[in-house]
Image (cartoon, rainbow, N blue to C red; front, side, top):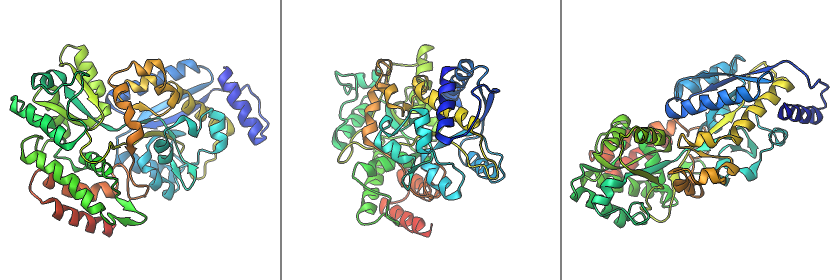
Amino acid sequence: MANWYRLTKALVLATGLMTSAAHAQETVVWWDFLAGGDGVRMKQLISDFNAAHQGEIKIDATTLEWGTPFYSKVQTSAAVGEAPDVMTYHASRIPLAVKQGILQEITPQDWNTMGLGKDDYAAATWDAVTVDGKQYAVPLDTHPIVLYYNKDLLAKAGVLGDDGKPKGMDSREGFEATLQALKDSGVKFPLGSVTADGNFMFRTIYSLMGQQDGELMTGNEFLAGDNAEKLQNALSVLQDWTKKGLQSTYTDYPATVALFTSGEAAMMINGVWEVPTMTDLQKEGKLFEWGAVELPVIFDHPSTYADSHTFAIPANKGEKMTAEKRAAVLEVISWISRNSLLWATAGHIPAYAPVTASADYKAMEPNATYSSLTSNMIFDPKTPLAGIAGPIFDVMSTYFVPTLNGEMEPAEAVEEIKLGLEDL
C-alpha cells in the first residue's frame, strides 16, 4: 500500500485538500482498442496491477473496436460525461482530440505525482503528446514498422550477412540487389507488402519521404516546395519494385502475413505488433528462423514512421474527477509504464526509457535490434487532419493502391493527392 499512500499524500499536499489516507477501493474504468497478441499482454498487465493493488485500486477494463469506431465512441461519450476514467489513445490523434476538447491535460503536478517526466522519453515521443506546450497523454510505447526476414531463404540466396541481418540495407542499390538475388534463387516474392491497403502503405511511403527530409505539411501548406517531388520519389521506388516482381501485388494485410509465414515471401514490411505472431509460431515449431530490423535506407538516411499508444484521461463534460480517483488513475498509468517490459513482448518499444535501458530488454530479440530506430522516428504531422483513420490517411490512400500496383503514374498520383489535401 506504500505506493498508494505516497500518491495520495502528494496529491493532498499539492492541492491543499483535506482527506483521509484510509478510504474505500477506487475502481478505475478503462477503455482500450487492443486485440490480438498485444491485447492478451495488456490483459495480463491489468490482472497483475489488480493483484498488486488489491483492496486499493481495481481496473475495470473494456476492449472496443480499433480505429474510427473507438474514437467516435470516445467523442460522443465525453460529450455526455460517460467516457472512462482512462483510455488508450494514439498519439497521432491527439491534436484532433485537443481541438474537440475531449482530453484533459496531464499537468506538471500529475507528472510529479507519477514520478515520470520529459527525460524519461525520446524527444519525438514526448513531442507527439505535446500540443501548444502542454501534454495531453502519457506515452506507453512506440510502434513503428520494421522489416521482417526469413533467415533461411536469405542464407540460401547468399544475402544474409555474417551478423545475421540482410545485406544491402544501406542503399537503394544494395537493397534492390538483395531483392533480385532472392528472386533469382526462386523465391516467389522477395518482399511482401500490404499493397492492397493504402492506409497501411502510408507508413512505408511516409518513412521513405522522411528519408529525404520530406514533410507532408509545412505550416498550413501541404507538400510545399520540393516535398511533392519527394513523395513522387517514394512512390516511384515502390512502384518499380512491383513492376520488377520484387514486391507482392494487390496484397491485403492478412495475405501479406500469410505470404511471409508460409515462406512465399522472404521479407515483409509490417508493424512490430506482428512479433507475437512470429514468436508463437516458432515456439510451436511452425516457423523458420527469422529476424526483424529497421527499414533499409533507400534515400539519404534512416527514417521510420511511428505512432505511439498512450494513456489519456477524457474530459468528461459535467463530471469532475475526485482527487482520490485522479490519484488512482495516475497510479494505473505510472505502474503500467514502469512494468512495460511485458508489453515489449507484444513487439512494441516501451516509451519509458528505463525499461528499454534494462538488461532484460537488451536481451529481448528482435526488439533490441530494431529499437535503435527510436532515434530515427517520424510521427504524423501535428494537425487535427492527421492520425490513424484520419482525413489525410483517407485522401492519400485512395491513390496509393493504383500507383503501387502500376495502374497510375506517380506524378499523376501526387498531383491528385495535393489537390485532395488542399481541399481539406
